[in-house]
Figure (cartoon, rainbow over the protein chains, first blue to last red):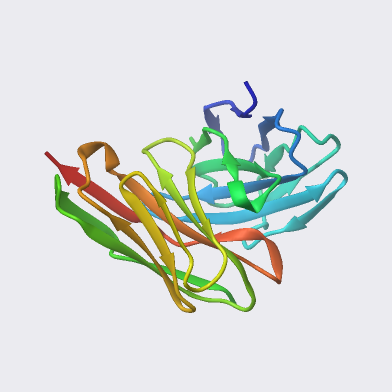
Length: 112
Length: 110
């Protein structure tokens, strides 16, 4: 079945560490997105990519980095520069606005 | 700056008690308005896309409508399984990515 897979489901980060969240899709979608969700809030855009080897900053890109070397993959690195990384991270992909975005099941990142 | 505001923040209904959720927006060049459902600890699930004022779409007990300033998600005779957070989002001409509202948490009691 086609879908979008995020891993790991839970991730713990120590102060000063960089961590990378994985996002893979087999839907053949061109566009991919990363959002952050804090408790009781909506989704905020971190980065997005419309095609391979190209990506744009969203509203809260500081402290994050991404790459888009393959159509299927859009990993997100949370760097030590991100001071409040504890949140629920959601990856999505899309091909047609009529069908909206397909979201992964999310990664919950906690700083310990 | 694009703004999307949802109200109420939380809504508690009795099973069968119909109601509406509101999504008001201030954007430049609306390309589409989207509704999603999100269950706790999961990714949002796509419900509808609306493109122009006057458009309506239905799915089971849900009906979405759009005006030039806001959208409504009408829930008719809700059931406990309709309990979730409902998110509204917009896509504009200036950015090919969705801007989300903060959501409405709906609880339907048996």
